[in-house]
Image (cartoon, rainbow, N blue to C red; front, side):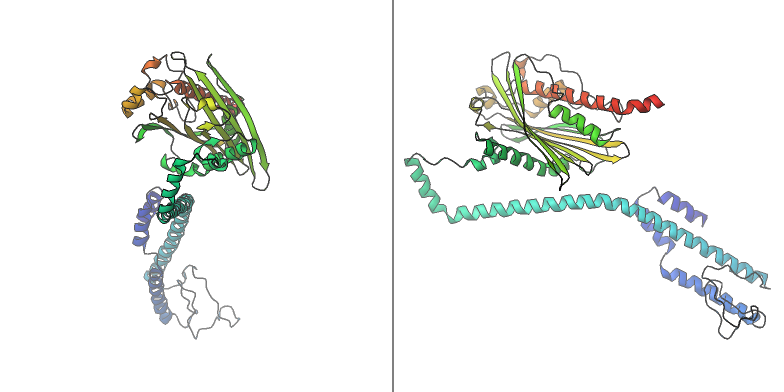
Amino acid sequence: MCEANAMLESAGDGDLDVWKDLRFLLATDDDLHEDLAHVCDLLDASSAEDDTQQVPTRSSCTSEVIPGQSNHSTGTGHKRKMSKNAPPRTDLKNAYESRQKHELYALRQQVDVLRAELERRQAAASSAVAVTSFAWQTAARQEFIAMNQSLRERAQLRDAIDDNTTFIDRMQLLLRRKKPRIPAPEQLDWQSLKLAAHSSLRTAAMHAIADRQLRRLQSAFIQASVYESAADVFNIDTTLVAKGHVQIRVVEHVSLPAPWNVIGDAVWDVFGGLRRPALPPMASETLEEIESVDNVHSGCTTTTIYSTYKEITSDTNLAVYSNVIRKRYRYDAAKDMIVWRSVKEDARMPQAKDSPTEDEAGWCQVVPVGGNQCRLTIVLHYHIDYTQRFVDQALQAAPPSVESITSLMDKFSFVQPPPRPGMVRAAPMAPVIDVSTIPTPSRGAFFYKAKRFEIALKDSIRDALAWFNAPRQAET
């Protein structure tokens, strides 16, 4: 039994397979108790044969009374039942039999205690696993539904094309002969990340783009290996998506010693413009608040901002643009999410159509993890397209390799781990780099812009941590 107790203690910190093995070794099914009760009954029966005339015999391991015996000691004439776990009698004449009964009773009590402890620990472990499993099951179900919907839409489009092949060919011949007089519907331009000039269509497109980004948050976190993860992650990787198309993914997933609303406000101060980063001499930025809605029924407050950025590069006087939609979803149920997406074309800025335009998508989430702790997750996708018509012919002919872009990102020191857990760190601005050596259409202007934003964001979070923890440090 001492060894079984030791096994229980060690199993509490071990794998779940140890629990299964221990449960099998202890034989916690009902057969064990039936066998043990049968042994106790045999001993009670032998005791009853020797002691029939003195005291009514009862089973010490079961609650049965021997038929035909009456309770003369109480004088009531009723049969007195003993509880199942009642200790054995102490008035037995046979010392050997008495010792056996007491040993069996102690053994059965230890088995009951171990069974209760095993069930308690199994229930605790199962509940902890169930919480994580439920979140992953929900995520898997949602991803499965989205995948099936995409496959159905793809099949429907293929069937429609196959059924109307002849009609499509005739329409193509007709359109080649005549200039189209009916413009394309602007209601669907948002799907191609285009904004119309009309105010109502423009606002609707911004909300549609942001809401689509919110639906993609879960998939982005799963692909970045930070969904429901408790470990801190600081990662940046470069992937060649297609020929001439490169994607840079930046991931930061960290636990911070402050409430979720404090960190969420600090993050939004930078995204919303209250603590926007400083601009270089040849750059300008405009922040336009589109809408702020407090939905009482859903418990969510949303704020939408449209940012327009323009910079003239110092070496070639090239104008680069970055038009970004930012939307905050602040839930009363302890969750703060921010999504952002670059716009490829803006009807109110036709001059940006033939210039390098930033193409990035990002997600940020702040959730509580217990007490005055929260977890901050940021995932950023940055796309570089070397096939655009305004890109240098040399870059179009020989796009840089993934290794060269990764080396360039290392020079800017993005996403640096903090010196110790619970902190944020932004490496200082990278030294001046010869922009002629930066193999990007914007000549590195967007990299410097991203670095300034990272420094401003980390400074805001660090100030929030210092503000929240200052009273506690003063008390100690």
